[in-house]
Image (cartoon, rainbow, N blue to C red):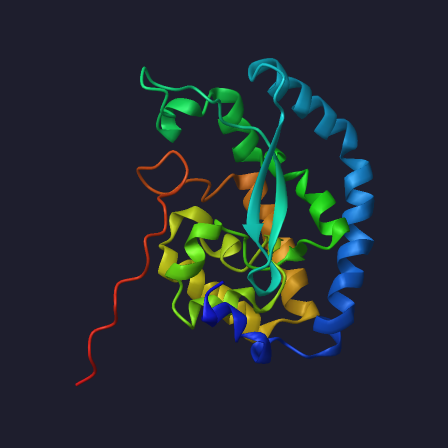
Amino acid sequence: MPAAILHSSFLIPHSFYARHGKRLLDLALAGPLLLLTLPLLVGAAALTASQNRGRWLFRQARPGWHGRLFMLYKLQTMTNARDADGQLLPDAQRLPPLGRWLRATSLDELPQLWNIVRGDLSLVGPRPLLPEYLPLYSPAQARRHAVRPGLTGWAQVNGRNAISWEEKFAFDVWYVDHLSLRLDLLILWRTAGRVLGARGITAPGEATTAAFRGSPPLPPSS
């Protein structure tokens, strides 16, 4: 695990809300939401399974708090279509209309309510990304792992996939520095508007979003 992740513990917010209240809010909201949306989840899973030869649940290891890996759950939105050499086709060719609709409505994220109940995720926090990104973060960007990742976050309500990676990480770190109940409630409120408006789902010119390759080095100061 990158040293930037291992040595970021001193940056963790230590307010009462960060230490205790945030987890209580997660349980108070995610548990009932999981029960209320269960019929919707079952229906969406059935549609997904009918399109993907019985596969409906997408599971993938993602870095969480302090960069520790956990298993993230989503509805399977992409097919496993491959070319003649057995290689997966590009995302745009593996994302059918049903998958696009699930992503546009954020229904594919519903299984992550279980991740929140388990304690892998929080309702609000930096989105959990791919493990291979860990060594690519700058020390400042790595601070996004000083809190639990979230189902939604400050970057999601400020552009989601329509902004650059550097902008996303700047929003994530700002959130770590300003974590509070008021901010979390504001993000949840704005998230509802984003979901209803289906804004920022994909990056410009991409079926989903381009992979993170690392930020360019900053120019030397004069």
